[in-house]
Length: 231
View 1 (cartoon, one colour):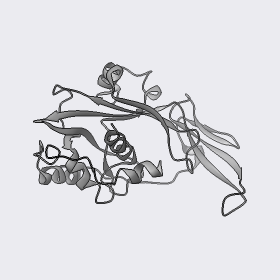
View 2 (tube, rainbow, N blue to C red):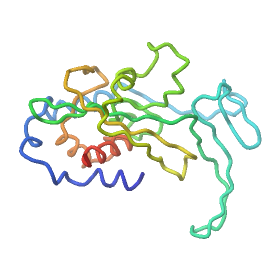
View 3 (cartoon, rainbow, N blue to C red):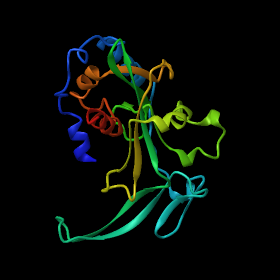
């Protein structure tokens, strides 16, 4: 995962005149959109005891959701002859189900654009970063009505058969246990899905500019940028 995110920062050596042409939105509009989305969110964190959590159960080795959704926090003992410390114990987060990170791509006046979502997520230092069009674990929503699904998950499901990239990749292993996601790139020719407060079509040149600075693109988005350049 670390190698993928570093590769995303390489300049696109294949960029031609069309890639450097105009974008659907100006650079100032994209920066203003990101700034506004960050200003609209305020995240606060408070510690509570395990006994006070709702919908979670725990035993001496695991904290897990009562319905088996989301993730578990598991205790592990590690022994390694190739690390700075020979042995240690630590908690790891084990997701329940395989994730999906999907990116819609389309050409606007011949210039390739990607549909990015500006959303708040726990752990972001700037509260909001740009991520893939769809990022979730489908199993966590399968029991809910479709109106409660993440935006455009239906579109991804319907168009996945025509994806130009669909690969199962492992996530970071120092904090997560058995975490995998399907990374999917889907090229579309129409204007669906449409933009909204959360979504903008961003040109690849603008993506490169955003990657010059910290905390603009999530690790999932950076992985998809690397994959898109490989096609």
